[in-house]
Length: 120
Image (cartoon, rainbow, N blue to C red):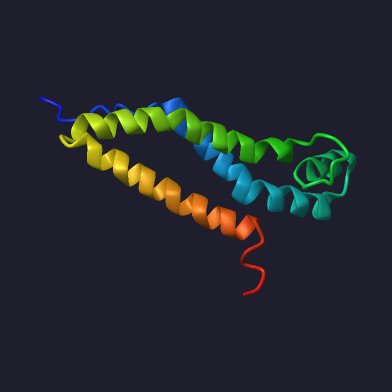
């Protein structure tokens, strides 16, 4: 009996790390705060404190969630670009699209963070 199962060339550890990070971003903060409200013991207080954003008074677990996500995205970009360039016969079009998207977001980032949109 022949199996027609397609083997994925995705890196499963990166997918697992991305999933864990998204879980932490979306669910963990509310979960640990709710757990602390219900139990209110030193362990749940510690966990709730670790998953709350602090003014810079020290390092907490919550402070690594977003940098971890950015690291995962940055680690995967070369694989994504190589896959797209290998499958696309006209590589120049893809580079122009990347440049256009980068320019667009850089322009709007400069407007928003530069204070040019405060008059709106």
